Image (cartoon, rainbow over all chains, first blue to last red; front, side, top):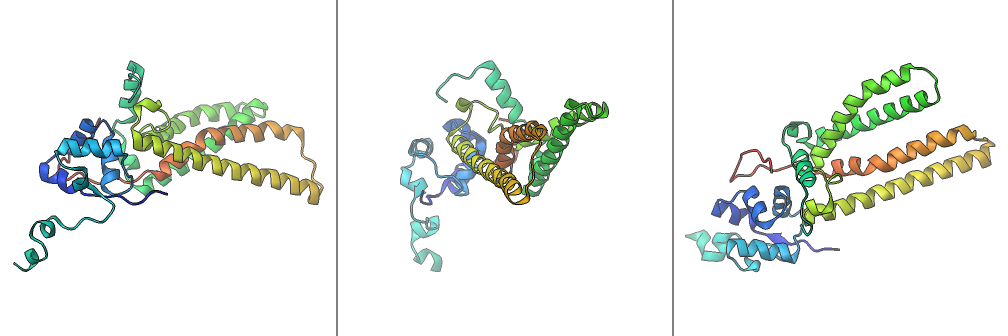
Length: 84
Length: 177
């Protein structure tokens, strides 16, 4: 049984303006596979996760986590960010 | 991809990933309809073929010729929906597709096992309880139907397991990878 791996791929990809096709080409996978990963319907291999992290120049834990991700604004500003 | 792709591999990849008929398998309902149509066309073609083999009527051969074109179109829809999951060689698929292909084959294997069990149990019970004696002439049609089922069941399973493509907010252009 595999555990659900949460990811922030869609957010980072949108922020960097990288299309699914461009990312898929860079990682050597089918563009639909990027969609499956983003929707949590497929957990990428360690190899693929590391390649994605290297592509974006981020640590792998910035993209993938066993725990659900907090919204980026909460991570940057903390809970106080909501009140400001 | 560990093995170099041949020209034929690349050609097949292009064919299987064309977006020309994407509208025909864009939603789960359309994919279910395509699978249903393909099953019906397959059953009709097999029936006509068996009729032609047994020489019942020449019209069976004519019917086969009429059924080949729609059957091929339906098969193309299934292959397009699955992006050639079962048609492309392993080194043309990525890790997610290889996992999916294994899963599809495992499911199809279980269904085939269930069908064989049900068939064997049905024949056994009919013989044992009903005293029915099965004619040897039924052996060939039964084996042929089993062969076709074994051949095509993975395609039907694969098509029914396909998930909808969510639109890409970064790039809305159609993908023709």
